[in-house]
Length: 380
Image 1 (cartoon, rainbow, N blue to C red):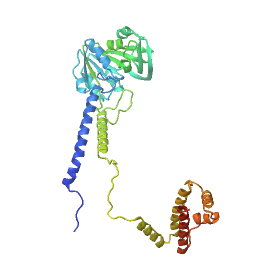
Image 2: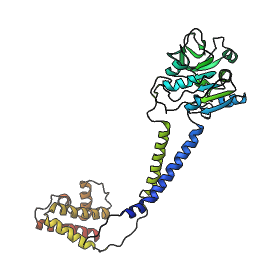
Image 3: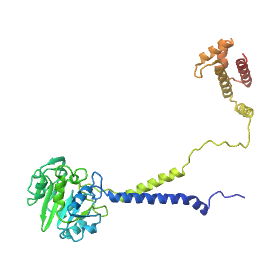
Image 4: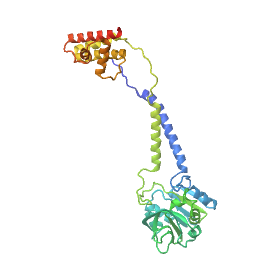
């Protein structure tokens, strides 16, 4: 009759329910923290972000000048009727052609495109195109008659540049490659801004950046600040690159799961504690162990191993008795022992380091001679 040693379903559940509960709680807590923190730092040029590439300072500046800022990441909010209102579209995310058409149909009075993609330009700023060149961070004069730029004066510009039609106002460029473009499309005013870093928390206080941002963006008392996300089917991004294959929200969940696995692994992992002495079921005396090993050597005719063990034991006693270093070479050991015992060095070398015995009788003789030598050491 045999007894099953495997766990049943109930035992397995009782063993796993605590780790599973802890894992679930850690995952939920991590996701909650990530959602709470990401709500305030939802990416570059976010009006809620206080990071260097955020735009919390600009949002506060606009609100101080009686501009109501409504931050959103939903396309539905950007597609609402916008007559008499302004819409700012941030540089993040990706929208397809149908998404941009929804924004066009909303008929916003003023649309500000921050580092827009090719699709955004085609839909909302016809005739404006990316030049393919970019400007490194530098201070530059407006070089145009646009009142918003003239009032601001010198501004820090960087990023992509645009080529605009003749009826557009082009500023902060060389007349061909411009970082700020204003275009009148029917009754709608469209601003194309390729230098979002100038309006971030890090650079807003430099040059006339704050004045330029306020004069360009604060034209209406109601501003919808739209940051596109990755829910749309489009793959067009401001610089023509493909968007990330994994949305940010999925990455947050992945990091939360990895953190939960690490916590559970540390919690459930084996930890080495103090050594615990256990009583042996059988006590084997040292003499019995030695005798048993000798019988094994004899049965396997391992005279070489038996002789090596005997010589190693004898050398250990000689090293200790005569103060010979453990790493001393053979000649030094033989010379020291010969000097203190009066034995012939050649015979000592053969006894301590010679060839293994060829018969049981020779092995017994070697054992006796080594025993005599160690006796001399213990009783000089």
